[in-house]
Each structure stands twice: as C-alpha cells, then as structure tokens.
Length: 250
Image 1 (tube, one colour):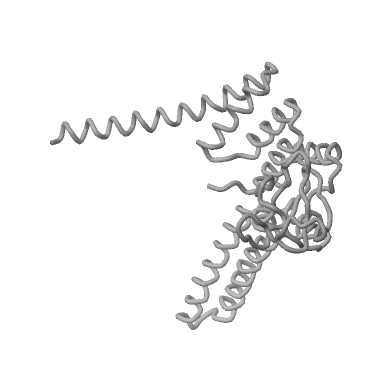
Image 2 (cartoon, rainbow, N blue to C red):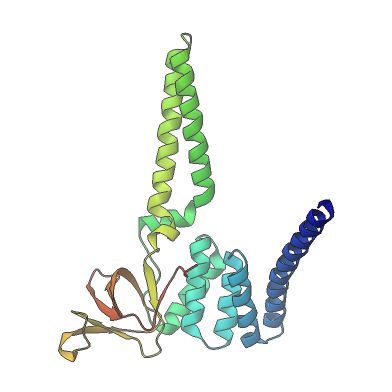
C-alpha cells in the first residue's frame, strides 16, 4: 500500500512538472518565433500559452505584436486591450492600442476619471491594503471595547482604518478596468456590424454601422442578438456574430 501511494505521488508530481514545462515551452517558443519573424506560428504558441497558463499583460502585448505583424489589426487591438485590462499602466500596450485604433479608424479606449484613476492605482495591491486596514481597524475596535484605557485613541484609529479600508475597496470597484470593461466587446467582423433599433435585420430599422475594431457595451442578449450601448450612449441591437467580449470566457 505504501509503495502504491509513493508511486501515485511520484506520478502526480511528474504530470504537474510536465504541464508546467509545456506552459513554459509554449511561451518560449512563441517569443522565439516572434523574434525570428515567424509571426503566424508565434500567434499559435502565444494562444496556446494563454489558454494553458495564467494570462499576463506582457503575453497579450506580444500576441498583439505578432497579430499586427500578421496584418490582423483588429485582433491585435483586442490583444492590446486585454493586456491593458491586466495592467492599465503598461505604457507599450497603451501606445500600441492608440496606433492600432488610428489605423482602424475607430475611437480611442475608455476615457474619463475612472479610467485615469485605473491607470494610476494598482488594483490588486490596493484591495489587499484596504482589506488589511479594515481588519486591523476591526481588531482595534474590539480592543477599544475591551479596554478602559486609551479607548478614545483606539476608537479614533480604528475608525480611520475602517473608513480607509472600505474607501480603498470602493475606489477599486469604480476604477478597476476589469470591472469597468467587464461587459465591453469589440467588433471583429471585417465588414463591421450594423446597429438596429430592434432585433431584426430589417433595413428600415438600421441606425448605423460600426467599423471593425469599435467597442460597445453589452447590456443583454436575446437569441442571436446583443442589446448594446455605444460609447456616446446610443443603444440598439447587434447580431452576436462578429462581436467578441474583451474578457475571454473561461
């Protein structure tokens, strides 16, 4: 029995190490092919890496470079947007996206105070710091209730920490691009896509046409149709074909 347990453990470790090695190999091969100008092959290996490993901002950025070199401008723009979702402060991806949007002839990325704060504040560390401050404040609050000395000081310090911790988490909830753009999608169809007043392809109900690379906010879905909102606030219906969410499905 002990030998069987040892054999099972060794087998699991071997499988685990093999999987990790494959993930690393995918990324190394992708970067090697990108460096040697084998762009189509690089795209394949970057996609395999992103499907099998935890996605990273740099991997999506390099995928965008390979797609751009392969003359797939909209796909490159999508990769750059995904890179910025993971790291809004990654300047190379932001610059590459601006250039891709200019070539596609579409409006720039999300703007406004929320997007500006999202680029300045690292979301995950801010949430962790806020959670730490909140629980430390809660501990000091209980300590103040239990102690008679220095109660006022402990109450004040606990209040500051509790409010600061909650405020940090609320700020991230309003500025994290992964939350702000969770329902954003990009038009990937080469011919663009048409916006209709109702979920029907009746030409008389057509409102406008969006170019490839344009982004919309998905409000709801009905069969083959998305109810969407354009950056200017206008709403209508798009066929789901040719529309890809910024955050890929798991």
